[in-house]
Image (cartoon, rainbow, N blue to C red; front, side, top):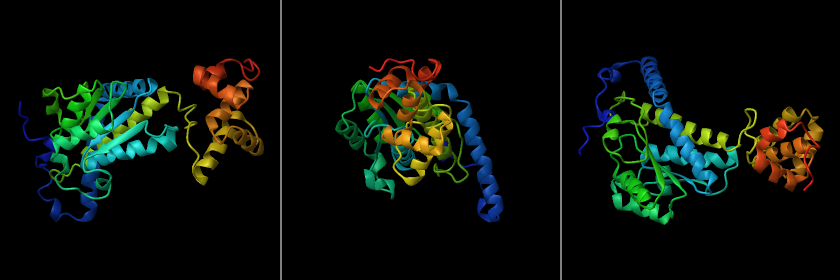
Length: 304
């Protein structure tokens, strides 16, 4: 069934005089539209929650979270995937992104890539998507052939799927198992989905991956305890959170973190359980830091 023109392609009734306005007024109108994006996401939070749960279940069973998109939508998927390892300690390849046009499309437009349905299907095949994975198609309009073909192929391979887009008309086509459709309406510059459609998409992807990681125990007391400390800033953050959460001095927190291989979650597990590194890590995987905390403190767990 054909869809009508996507709302993101329609002319915004408040944009006719945009090119006549001074810069401060243009900025004000853009900001007003961003609030529209925020409110649109608020109306689809139940669907965002379902997608986050699906993502968590995929990762828990050893599968992957796979974003598929083109243009701005695809780059937002790449950004989210790139941020999961340093922020949450996600393993390499656990959260990946497939971008129409390949990696070079991350920094420049690859003309016609989004229209290549065969490439979308092939990309999913080449990524060896299967029943353990959760695939999220990201498309502002839902009409991108690359994304449509990728989702069809993923479903045929047995993967669970979702579609994140800003066209409520997509509900007429059951393109995925989960539909997250914030209705952001026409862009202030018609068709420029890097504006509020992009803002809404970023909010949705943030919520999906973050909520999934929280549910998997990657966050403790509001801190990213599973972060990978690959820079000076992150090493300082890791030491600071261990110090804050244990009450140890800076020097003792640093020594504990060193014995934990630089991983704050491991350091905290060692502190809470009184066990060595490997035993504490095994126990944290089984009961979580909250479970260790509720046990009554160090010394309550057997050494093996």
